[in-house]
Length: 116
Image (cartoon, rainbow, N blue to C red):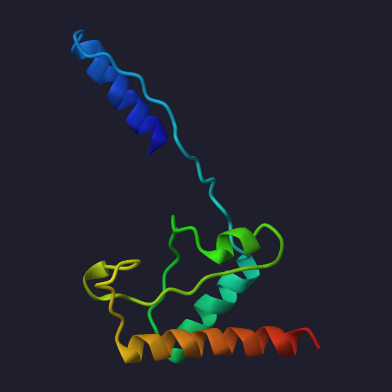
């Protein structure tokens, strides 16, 4: 996205010579990769429970963002009405919250028992 934005700005500036354009990054948050083995456990637990799941990238600055740099970490998201999250209008149904919690519980139990 960054490269596409920079190309677009450059094209705009060269097409309209009267526009002075100077793009300066104010903040950069590098991608954090979550633990592949934990992500696999989340996917398999969700599948076993009949819960739909897919991998996604989060740009939010969750605690997991910082933890992932030190210890194996993964996140589980549940669907929010109208896709609105991190907002006072956020709403997740009790059933979706319970499904997410049960997936989490399954992952924790699997990880605990597989490590002796």
